Length: 281
Image (cartoon, rainbow, N blue to C red; front, side):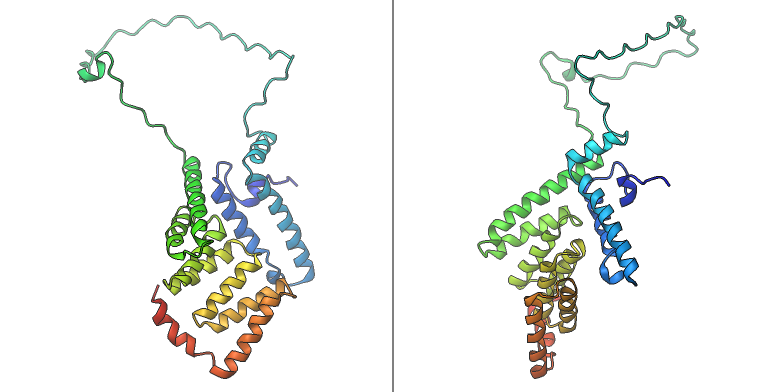
């Protein structure tokens, strides 16, 4: 059986930009979640496949490794000549007999009008804009997102969430399927600034979708669910955390607190209050 190359394993084209490769990897990884397995044998098979696609992703996400891999499978640039070994001479082109021009059958078209200023000495011709490939354009957006995120984190670390918020929004807008932390920080800023609770939940859910195995992101999502009064979903998230990390004290403490809190209040008060505080999405 023919072994698939890394691009085929991830289901992407050879010219796919970095963001598309990352999105394809995370989509595949989510399907290999331990909860998806129906038997121990299937769980082991999923683990083996996850290791394979992770190896492919770790190669293709690194520009240098990707270039080397492309070269190894015959899709990269031609190898450089070995030092001290002359390259074989190129074959001389075959001589073709000179072709006589055909007699004109129609009168020549009049010459197009020329801008006199463009032909004056010392006048530079108009600049030619370079053609940017879709891959280069996508990578430029990724760089813009990275710069915006770094600036947002400067404000976030000083608890200036209002100033950090627009930078995280720019990061998410330019790289919506890229870094999970962009969405997580946006969600936290929305909660801290009492913005749209619906957007905060959606952003936190997206962060967990993009980074399925990050327990810390799940804990933040659970706490946001608690804050907006969706106790049932918060409980599901904390229980999911404990399936990944059975000794997670933070998830245990939140579940214990929620059990005690719901026994006193019925768990319905926050759900009625917080939508009016945070506003609709």
